[in-house]
Image 1 (spheres, rainbow, N blue to C red):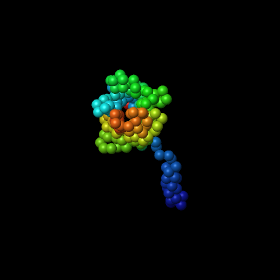
Image 2: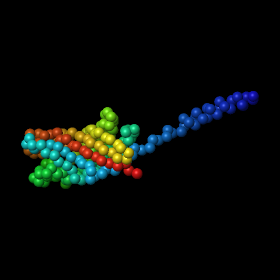
Image 3: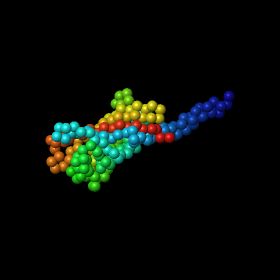
Image 4: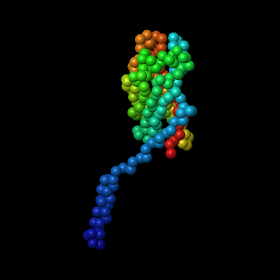
Length: 196
């Protein structure tokens, strides 16, 4: 056996190792994009006035969702809400919500939630930490939700608790929590389909 024949396999192995190290790692497929069924989904909130509980909802909102339980670091949620579309079933209250002392929709026509990190919180449970912006003020907030994916269909329910005073929602006589509590719970019901 010649010296070349003895050395060649070793050289070949070294070349393969170097080439393998130089190749970038194969990128994972991006998380699936989900299309929200707006007719079957709801973005609601709960509070009280003078001790009497009430529920409300937003009629106009949208959500951009990229999600894969196996790729949480690359998953994201972005929700945009038209606060002028808030309805609570009380005409006086509903007419006052868009005004300056509450949502001030002429100056701030949209509220948004943008996730920065999504983590697992147990079987079928997740926490989406992110930034909530209302009335031009951005604060950290966490959307906790449960999720069930069946084939190409996803069903999720979630909630987010916010302190309205941190966003300036409620001015004048409503700035404190005597009549309307400072903490407001936002509830979500999402039905979505995996985009093709």
